[in-house]
Length: 93
Image (cartoon, rainbow, N blue to C red):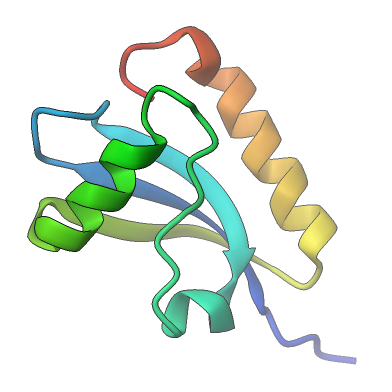
């Protein structure tokens, strides 16, 4: 049986000066196709993220880096990537 690959992990690159340059996430491909731009939970960056996406969307580029058949797979890979780059403690993420 062939599974449709509908869940993804992604990397967003930001070329501005107000946020870290990278963001790792996961979601459904359908949601991305409908305009999803990531969900920043950081109190420090949440408002800036929303403002920058609204005022300067040209500063962001989303790259799908993996496709999966389940949400759980996509989320597991997202978590492994976040740990691998030490995103929580890195000024790059």
